[in-house]
Amino acid sequence: MHGAGNDFILVDDRRARFPVTDRKWISQVCSLHDGIGAEGLILLQPSAKASFFMRFFNPDGSAADMCGNGLRCAARLAYDLKISPKEMTIETQVGLLKATVIKKGVRVGMPVPSGIRLHFPVSVAGEAWAEPCAALAKKGQSITCSFINTGVPHVVVATDNLENVDLPRMGPLLRRHKDFAPQGTNVDYMRITGGHSLCIRTYERGVEDETLACGTGITACAVIAALTKKVTPPVRVTCRHGDTLEVDFKTSGNNVKNITLSGPAEYVFEGEITYAGSWE
Image 1 (cartoon, rainbow, N blue to C red):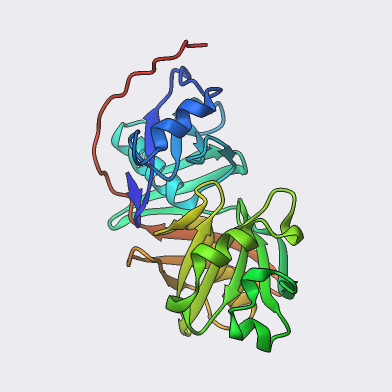
Image 2: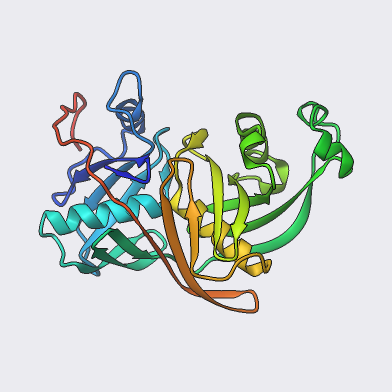
């Protein structure tokens, strides 16, 4: 399935038999060239607290706590498999989240953000990759960033020239910058396009590349833009895939609550794959 071009392998694992410890195999399955190809693998597992538990793996085989686009796809699949009604509760690593299948996709509740820091400089002085960037040189070789954890960490950079951002170069270096060690961060560049709208590009940790959409990144940019008085919710966010998703929430100072993310959750194909390893 895909959510705005962010594509996932989803598995009905209500019997909890999926080989979750075989991270190498998960990475191989997610490989574009010799596997199915995906930007994440999602398991729908049993839950004593909710309709199901969503377990998420990055395409490198590492586990992640949260994925907004993946959450929408999981909710859509659960509804279609009659695991849950249209309005459901999903257990995740970041807690219980609500989801509703709507006419034009799925609306999901997002976790309360944490770790918010607005407008702080990230030094790139002495970094060879900064020298060709005239804009950085004018700012004393630092990038003004904001940070927020919307289930996973995101650093957000505002720009007026989104298309010309060298994300394949800037993304991995901010993602691994010492200021965000040891876990690293996802990287989002955003451009404000109106009082309720913006567009973004995202470099995803674990994918280690630019992706066509990122639900937690879309949410991160919408919230940061609102907290810095650039937009007012609800915020329409256009991702690299071209889809526009809606993020709604309430703010009080730097406190943010009742965040929802609405957007598409579409099927690509269904199939079977054989696991060659030994089941645990």
